[in-house]
Amino acid sequence: MQPDIESDVKFADMPTIRQACAMSPATKSLAGAQLFEGVCKRMKEGLRDENPGCNDETIHGFLLEKLLALRKLEETDAFIHGTAKSLTLIPSV
Image 1 (cartoon, rainbow, N blue to C red):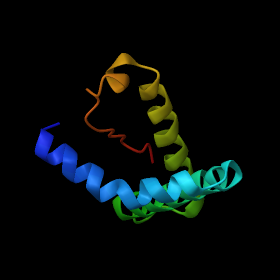
Image 2 (spheres, rainbow, N blue to C red):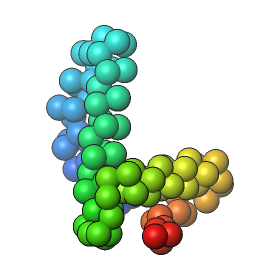
Image 3 (cartoon, rainbow, N blue to C red):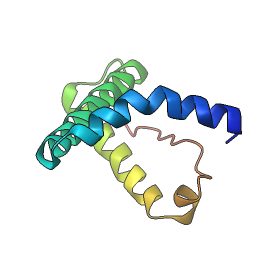
């Protein structure tokens, strides 16, 4: 990352970092679960946009497929070394 961008990122994240440092471990755990729930909700919204004719059960299945693929990516060196650019799954409808 370029030094000028890196300093901007640190500055932008500072309130979030301070807030996280002030949280108890239990609150941090809850916040992590809430963040994950929000991400899943946004992912489902995107999947609905990509697959307008699908019902909630099918969308949930697509979400699980994406999460499984992400977990597999995490286990590879490509993900760890930052070379995984994006995740594209073609739903099997």
